[in-house]
Image 1 (cartoon, rainbow, N blue to C red):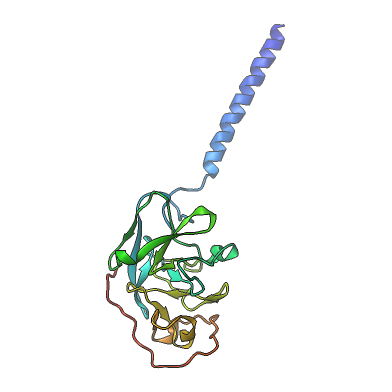
Image 2 (cartoon, one colour):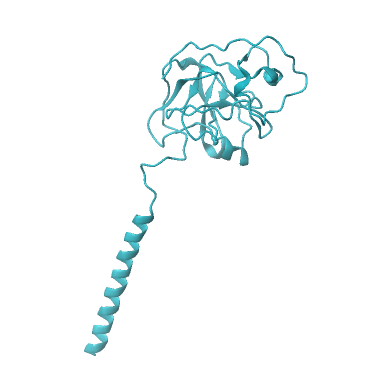
Length: 213
């Protein structure tokens, strides 16, 4: 009888020890919380839209980490048309339900807003257009998505006045009065495709007023 009790006690101790070791291993495999985060906006706290001076583009909107923000011409009437696979390449700036959306240096608070997006998330807007980052920008200050034709249309950066900055050969993509033409052409992506009915007019220099980093 005593032998059985001893065996039971030994078995219980072994199970407890194994569980403790497993917990330690799980902690060792847990990602470092201090590394890069996949979310465009923090899970809580104030969401800030800021500006950054990018060569060839001037002062454009960026997120709180300094990553370039883009607008999608297909979005209309304060709504988003980017969903499913599109969100993998162009994650939107999401705003938690109880959060504030604040204007950073050079950004106009009156142009900021939110709309209801996929999966019940609120998406930040500027001049009525949803704001997205581009997964191909791996460092702050890059604008690899500028003029890129992907997921059904071209994507453009936006300046503090709420104007999209459009390469000279893509002017027909945006309605008149909603964009400025960029110069030089060095920021046009090789994947960007011109749209029908475009015309070559004299390029205007984008507005570079507003706050810089």
